[in-house]
Amino acid sequence: MRSKKKLACFGGEKTIKYKFKRYNSMSSEEANVASNIIKKGILSDFLASPNEGFRGGKLVRKFEKKIESFFNVKNAIVVNSWTSGLICAVGALDIEPGDEIITTPWSMCATATSILHWNAIPIFADIDPETFCINPYSVEKLINSKTKAIIAVDIFGLSHDVDLLKKIVKKKNKNIKIIADSAQSPYSFYKKKIAGTMSDIGGYSFNCHKHIQTGEGGAIITNNNRLADRMRRIRNHAEATIKNKMNLNNLIGYNFRLGEIECGIGIVQLKKLKKMVMIKQNECRYISKRISRLKGIKVPFVPKNQTHSYYMFPILLDTKVLEVDKKFIFDALIKEGVQGLNNSYPIIYELPMYKKKIAYGKKGFPWSLSKKKINYNKGLCPVAEHLNENKIITLEICLFNLEKKDINLICESFEKIWKNLNSLKKLKNIKRLQ
Image (tube, rainbow, N blue to C red):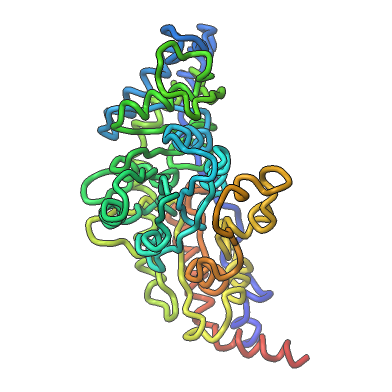
C-alpha cells in the first residue's frame, strides 16, 4: 500500500480530476455591441476602390484609432488575421524574389510562410537559451548583401532584445528593416515601451486564444506613413486602389479586411487588455514562486527592464540533475491531470516543405534564385534543437481561465512528482528490466 501511495501519479489517484475552464474574455458588453451592429445591418463597409470606403467602415477606423492611442503609434491597420498582417508587412518592404529575410525557428509557421509568400528566402537564426527569442548575435553572423529584413518574434509573451538587434543592424546595414511579430506579447514592456512598437513594423494577433480576441483578427502597427499606406493597399485589393505613380513593387492586393462586428468587439476587448495581462502575470508569478524551489527546474527568465505577458509558461528541465529524461516528467504531469502541456515547440525548418523545398515549382523557387546552397538540415540552430529535444516543457496558460484552486493543483502536481521522483525512477528501471 505504501508503494502504491508513493507512485500515485503512475496509476493511483491523480491530483487534478476535472477540466479547467476554457479561457474567455467575453462579456455581455461584447454581445450587445455585436447585436447592435447586426440590427443596423452594416457588417462591412469596405470598398476596393480609391474612395472613402477604401479605409473601411466606421468601426474599423474607430478600432484603428483606439489601437494607435493605446500603443502610442502613428498608424494601425486591422486585418482578418495576424498571418495576413505578416504578409502585408513583408510585402510593404519592396522585397524582390530571392531576397533573404532572417527569422527565428521558434514561432508559428506563418512567420516564415509570410516570407515565402513574396518569393523571398527564410534564413533561420538561433535563439537565446534564456528568453527563447531570436539571438541578435546569431542574426549578425547571417547578415549579407541579400538580407533585406529581420522578423523578430516576441515569443511566449516576452520581447526580443530590441536595442541589441537594432545596434547590430545599424552596424551591418542600416537599410535592413525589422518586423516585430508580437502576436503573443500585446502588452509586454521593453524599457517602458510596449513590445512591437519599437520596430519598423509590429503587430498583434486577436485570434481566439490570445489575451484579447475578436474571433480571428490582427493589427499591424508602424510609425512609417509610407509603409502604412502600402500595407493598407495590400489589405484591400491594392491593384484596384492605385491612382498615383507610386512604386508598384509587390503591390498585389488581397482581401485581408476585418468586419464591423469584429472591430466592435475589438474596441471593447482593448479596454480589457491591461487587466487580462495582469491576471496572467499574477498567475505565473505564483506558479514560478512555488515550482522554482524544486531541483532541476528553471522557470521563465524575465530580463531587467522588461515584463512578460505569459501567453505560454515555458519551463526548462535539467535532466542531468533529475536523472530522468524530459518525456518521463512530461508523462508524469499528464498522468497527474495537468492540462495545456506541450513537450516541444515546433521548429519551422523541420517542416517537410523546408526539408524538400517543394514550396514553389519543380526547381524549388525561390530557393533556386539563391547563389548559395540553402540547407535546413538538423544542426542549423543547435540551441533551439537542444532545448526542444531535451529541456523545454510549456504550459499553455492562454487556454484557460484559471482559478486559485486550479493554480494550486498545478503546483501540487509538480511538487508531488518531485517528492516521489526517486521511487518513480526505481519503477522505471524495474519496467526496463522486465
